[in-house]
Length: 191
Length: 181
Image 1 (cartoon, rainbow over the protein chains, first blue to last red):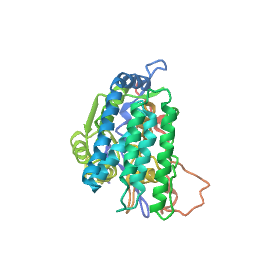
Image 2 (cartoon, rainbow over the protein chains, first blue to last red):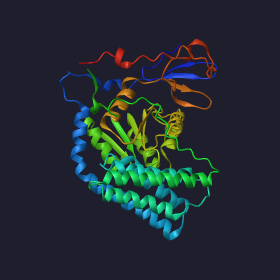
Image 3 (cartoon, each protein chain N blue to C red):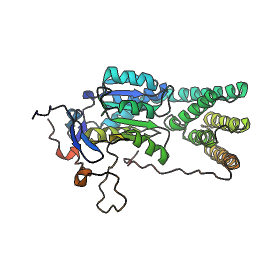
Image 4 (cartoon, chains in turn yellow, blue):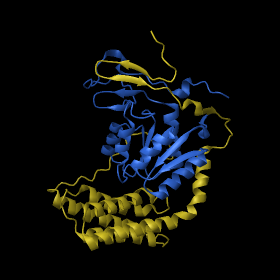
């Protein structure tokens, strides 16, 4: 019987599935460190903090991209491509805004994502609804340093969620599932 | 204390957003990684994967040409490329349970919802390095074992056939590794 090569996976065959244990090529990267050595997470956070001087400009460019996607829809109509561009722009803001220091903009962008995702295929979306979302995201970013920015953003986002829910109910036969499921993967502390 | 020697790992970051690629590169370099390759869409990502043979792939979900799920399915083709077992960390603004399940069922190893944090990314990388899961191959699935926990009190239908060996004890590598000083 031929012996198994060291870098080949170990395969155990069962009635309707195989269990495969691949060679662990990443084991080489595990090391024991002294307790007082520099924490890599802290070092990465410092590197990110050094980069943060760029974030305001990046947020502006993301807002400009969202606005351009909205204007393309206003000028040429809602093609599949235009809709995808708007969704990607909103989705990126939803994911990045907090990292860039504009956490309040993420919720307004998330409402626009939901509007675009949950509307039935082929159902037109009133342009005013899209305008309200895009304008709200831009206003929240523009006014984020104002003393009442949080209150303004909270009110704006609540209103956006309300009108989005009303619209989705009207086009989904009264159904509107705004369920934010908890993640199913474990989160580390501080994550 | 066990840590990762990042300069022994090669990363591939696939994201259509240049800002997010820069953030990921900054974090990975901050961890100590030297080899970080980038691609801006699924097609370029697959090409970079084939060319650079990374140890770990970090991919976005929503991307042009083909998305992170399609990319994962292409990588998880036994025999089709150099390393169908490569750990894939999906970093995405999608956080709904149905999305997490869809990513899992495509063969994604770890899921990380935005906003990104240094600690969140580090923990996912630590998990794929220190606690690798066996792969399961069925008629409809090829990817990391989706059973992270062995529940002795489970009473539902048995979806895998094959006797006692169907549940694989997954001892943490952290517990058994003999670390080279």
